[in-house]
Image (cartoon, rainbow, N blue to C red; front, side, top):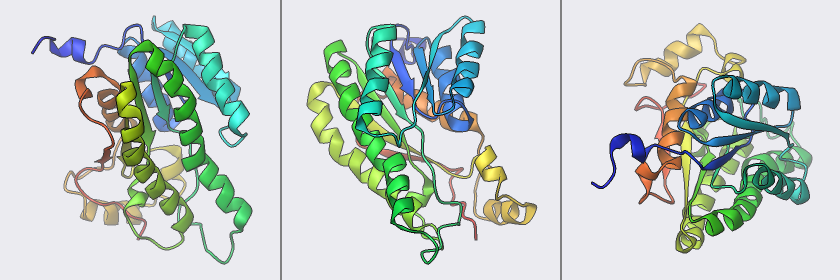
Length: 261
């Protein structure tokens, strides 16, 4: 081995863009990647949330910038996010496609319409594809590229009232597996991290003690996930430690399956 362990996770001089970086898993990714030395562009549709995360990183001695972007705003806005990030820090080396939405057991097929479906697919599938396409231009030029998509256990589970969210995340997994063939020759890796039930505001909106108990009954590691559990997996896939891993979906779920049953 020609590198020590610390070097394998060192992102000094790399620039990362994190969508949905103002809260939850996105915020955790921003914090851990900054701690690894990366220049972090915190993107969020609510600017003050992005600014708060960026300010916290800078207060700890890291490099960060905040940019507002709604990933449903269309291709021009998404390309602008990547170009603005590159203008601030010189390039883009790492992209974390974290922003997304839908699910929560609320997708009764008789009470959603095509507008809803299009919006969820834009967040969960089309935006990651567009952002990856434009980020890859900078990654290829820089000689380093890693894309990590945040998918979901719902991409492999089958649950009622989850058809649009679940299918959009399943499509994201397959997009990743196929894009690995397109991006690999350019020196760019692409992978997915699939969180199980993680203690975030989104989970708190549906979690009850009874639901948690049922989730833990089929979770070998007898606890729900924390944001740091997901952020550490993202760091691994963003870093040189995973230099021969691409096209994969890593489920981070305590070894089990947490559903809303």
